[in-house]
Amino acid sequence: MRASNDSEADAAFAVLTMVHAGGLLISADSFLFFRKERLAAPAARYAMSAIFGFREFAAAGGLAG
Image (cartoon, rainbow, N blue to C red):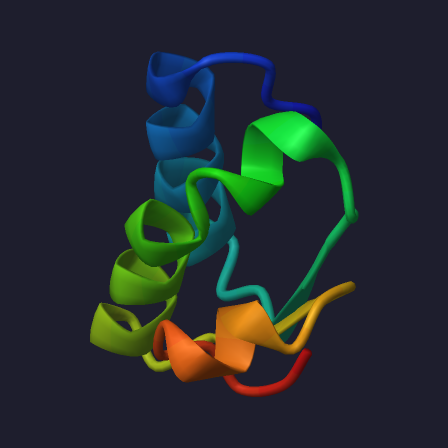
């Protein structure tokens, strides 16, 4: 799924949760980098393994970066 704004990112998590996605790979781009906490929180809340292209994502609560 693609997300280029906050509401699209929220919608993506809703869909991924509904389809019981086993994991999530978040691309390393500037839009998503500056929202790492916003992305790590729902990944943790829904117990979804999430990997990001930068180590700061893990520091923000994601699984790995």
